[in-house]
Length: 136
Length: 351
Image 1 (tube, each protein chain N blue to C red):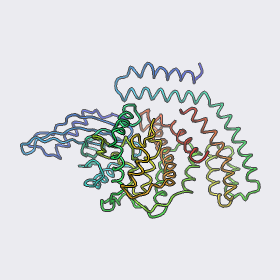
Image 2 (image 1 turned 90 degrees about the horizontal axis):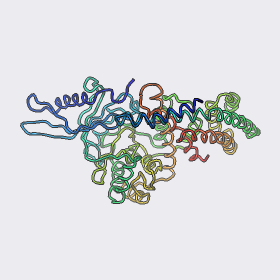
Image 3 (image 1 turned 120 degrees about the vertical axis):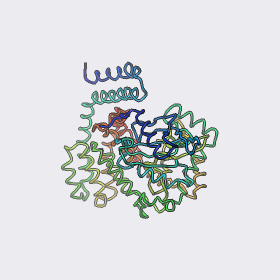
Image 4 (image 1 turned 180 degrees about the horizontal axis):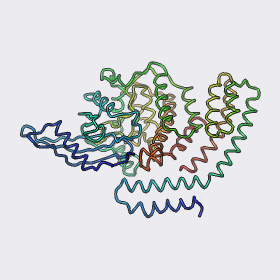
């Protein structure tokens, strides 16, 4: 049995067998919450590889698109350095890019800033849609 | 590690009884007796006991309803909101038009109840949970009768028209005119986010950068409750008998509270604000009672600030579980509330 399937089974047992048999409102709620948490982890495990692949593709495309977007712009040194350093740094790297864009907003000019931020935001949108799929 | 309900309720009741005996000084060697003891709200915030106390004074039988709130040591927002501050705020609000429980005593001596606590009046009324089926029915029925919607608005108006300087509330911190109020709020929630040591969240970074870049100017300052909605208000005979949960209050922009009332996150299955009041009625009654015009742009800004605040809450809550400071699985569950709030924030930011 795959780990995610086993966790689904555990969640079902918690919800259908253990929870109803527990005395006390607080303790019963804990049993049901335990089922919810285990279900979320199972879902997360099931899609982890798929999501990681999609994210890697999107981030690579984002860096290419940012290169194009910023090609004719005066790119502040902090943003340039961040773009070079953040590529292999996952969410932390994306955070630093967003911060560097806002910090460099004046130097970039409003139109370039907006275009570059939109490129990053497309990736963030795709990521959050996937996470919400698991969370809800 | 602190877990919910580690102290047997019986022991706590006995200790409360002994404490009240020292305060109420009943006749002779008699002790204060407690009846109808009810413990509520375990786990998320401060522990709360409601009960009636009975004693004899000068030969006369006396009774009084009390509420004890105790710091469980691991409450959400604990480092931002302590019972000493709550007690001081309630003391300032006593004898004002703001409906609030009368405070009696605050004790920071752990030896008495095992943790700091405050004692205040038990105010008549109920506080149905607006997210549950029974609660939703309660508010729907009350909205239909028409009295509670007005009382809900009037209580907020009383809060926002309070002379907070005269009431002694300047100790909460008075922002300078301009963006100081928002700057303070952003700093407060950034601090909570940093404390949680959650993994980096790029949408949250985007949100905070946007909030910093678009901070509205605030010149009108009022006492802001910070979480004004059904569920934090005691209702008695269709009227607000007390505003509860004085944990996030601040001197600041009245639109901060108004935005919370207007938020569709604070209603479920209804168009009524906070499950209770029609939007147009709320605008008309609030503006009429306070003389403050509702600023929709400011409210939209504050709704995004609330998104940041919600993320900070959930990060803090899930961190309490992850780091072993609480065993409450409801806190673990909030880990998955974070992407839901961030998704909504992204939509509000236009993506």
